[in-house]
Image (tube, rainbow, N blue to C red; front, top):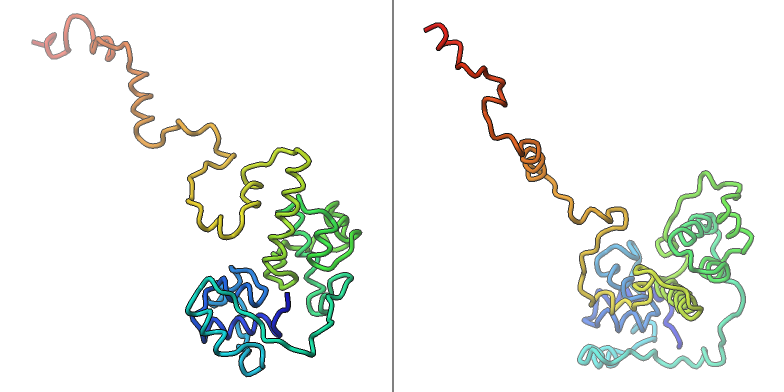
Length: 252
C-alpha cells in the first residue's frame, strides 16, 4: 500500500486539522494507533511541524470530508503518476548515523523484554547484525557495562506496528511448535484493539503467590493473643497470688 510523504508530519496535521478517527489516520499514514494517540496527547512527534497533504497534492478536501462523515471509511492517497513502478527496496534496514549509537540499547531492550524474538527479527527491527545481538545476549559486548535498555520505538528505530507484528509472529510460531504459552505471552497475541477493549482483571504477581490468606493489621495480633491466652481461666494463677488473700488483709 502506498504511503504519504512525511508520514508522521502528515499525521500531526490530520490530528490538528480534522476530526478523523485515530484508526483512519493510523492506517493512512502507516502508523500504529497508539502513536497517533500519542501525537494527540503531545507525547509523540513533539516539535514536528504538520505537513499539509492537501497543499502537497496527496489528499483532497473532498476525501477528508467523506471519511469524516463515516468513520468506517478509509482515506485513499491521491494518485501520483510519478510513483508508478516503484518497488520496495530489499535489504537491511537503513539506520541514520545519528541513531546508530542507540542500537545496542534497543537490542538490549528487545532481548530482555521479548526473548521470543529471533535474532533475524531483532536484526530486521533495528538494522543490526547477528553477531552484535549475540554479544549482547551473552553480555560479551565491548560496551556492555554502559548499555541501558531503551524501547526501540522511543528511539525511532522501528514503529510500534512493526514491533507488534514481529512479536505476534514469534508467538504464533511458538504456539505452533507446541510450546506452552504463559499468560503474558497470550496477551502479546492480542491486537491493540482487543487489549484496549478487554476488561482489566486483578491478577496477583507471581512473587506474591501463597499470600492470598495472609491478614495484615490488628486482626493477626488479636488472634495471636487469643491463642496465647487460651486455656487460662484462673486469674489468681495468672498473677501467682497466695491462696490466703492479699497483703492488706494480713495487716488487718
